[in-house]
Length: 377
Image: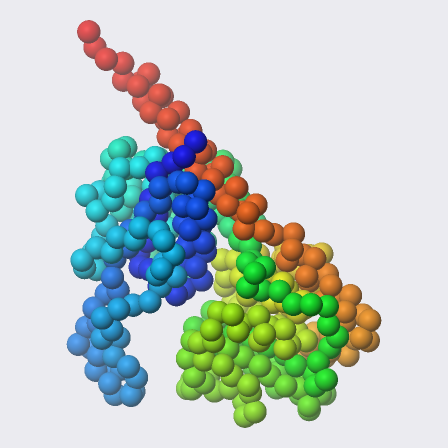
């Protein structure tokens, strides 16, 4: 059955969450479904925001006329409303299913009439980690929407905190046309990599401390990084780091593949796509037990270390880099095998099944309400 599907976004940008949504939007459209994405523009910065950025010599936010996003040029209808306000029913088309993708969007979608579609909630994180209003965030988990979660820990949250075991678990995947690498040995110079970010919960400070500690035993250790901005305060990269700012998408696999191990020291993650991307490029991963890391690394292919534990991460770096070539290649092969067990074809099929369940649950609720309120003759 072909569907009319609407995704409602708080903003369309280059975040990992938007990237995943854009993949589903494009793939569902290619299957013949009618897909619409509705988003609002970024909030205009206040005078205080502008002054703070001006004093620090940073670009003033909101000055751009065009904000790039993963929805540019993918062939999916994208309606951007005129201002930074809530999306309302008149902004979206009638559809079979409408998908909230962020806690604020769930609040908006809760007010939509049935003509806008059965209501689904695509949950890529428990968004209280960003300092959001916890009560409001948690209230959206209690809305009568069908939940679609991307990792086991979010499924556990749905079951244990909110008493809803009727969800769909749809793990993220990786594009093997973009992320892959041939069988290889370790680098001639021991090399570790990480994604550079100033966002505190990404834990880059812990990764850098771990590299510093590991270099006490392996002074020749090389660091390779990439990110959306140059190195700078408050988190300077060490001298000699090979850092790439906003690499072209087809270059990222080369960065992963140039490393013997990839570091993910996040304090909080919804899924952790870089783990899967690095593994698809045959790079073992050392990660904290956040997001999908526990299930992704359970078969091997790297190591799990405790949160905020730079010495433990450093020890894991040294241990993996000192493996024999054969043992390291076994770790590399396991990482690749894990990554290839996930596919966007499978994920899209599961996502479509989840949307069908959303419609079925909505129809069942409508039937129950009709029985509870019979027409009076």
